[in-house]
Image 1 (tube, rainbow, N blue to C red):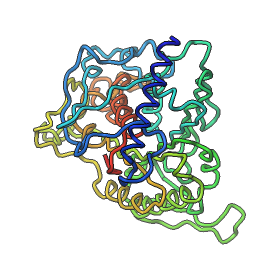
Image 2 (cartoon, rainbow, N blue to C red):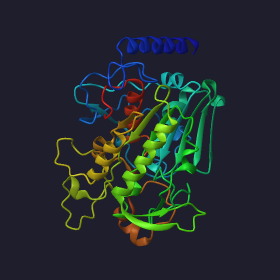
Image 3 (tube, helix red, strand yellow):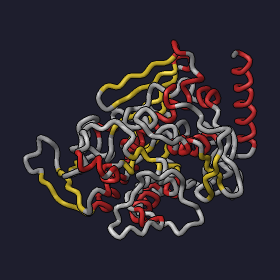
Image 4 (cartoon, rainbow, N blue to C red):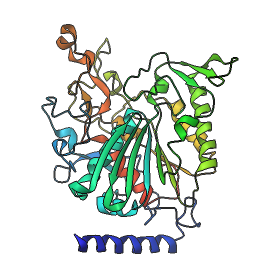
Length: 397
């Protein structure tokens, strides 16, 4: 083990020196970005590529051996009969992703704090990362606890924490309870996000996401004024406009609280759903086909018509591009759109028992939003790993 650690440290030092010599910065020619140990190949667009079956190298871990996966994501434990969804690897065109190295990542996070902030999709990516890392840590040298909205994984030998903070809309909202929440009747506070952001301060790596809750309706309510302000009122705004407003608040917070010389910030783009099979050529007249019983990806060459909001994707890119603190966009959207097969479907813990009518038609209660683990979120972490340690000159991957 000691030999392995020494080798990893030597690799880190050599790669960091190479990155410094190359002047690898976010815009090129500047100082190396924090955590960068190398550079991505020039002209590599990881958003373009295809899913390749890789039974030799995938999955990286087994569902049963990772104790951090919530029962909503343990598809095998809940009776899913197939496993092929675990064995696909994303292959970008013209380049390859660097191999995920758990020991290297832990060494680079030594003495640091990494924090994921967002909704249940972001939490799924967070749990995936814990599953990718935990085998590299002895059992007695790690711990995990959740208190209210904050979950904390500690790698004690590395003096590192990897955390998740539940804030599905980033701003304060009526959905801030980490257990009891609903996307119906969404209400956000228009004032600065002080209560949430107090947990974000001091993080060395921040990974945000926010999308799903914003597209649950065309309008959203905004509460103006503080709790003790008698003039506070509720106004209604288009979801996209409210989303832009909140993203601008996030940018202002980053510019006041994050030192780009020491810290890195990322935003994970929209995780798609697969609720209408007509998007991939299922001509069901009623549009009732969805992800249920799908066992293979959609071909990258197909005429897939995804339902992800292009307006929200543009808003994300445009607003975050205004930040004086660089925000790396981890583009998971297009590659995830091909994975109709990898959702939890009906193979998860059901908090409400399906009715007899639903059981007669499993499509009616299939979850086509969340993802089985191991699965697609592992690839999201491959992209994050690449962006963190091997950044390119482009902010958008």
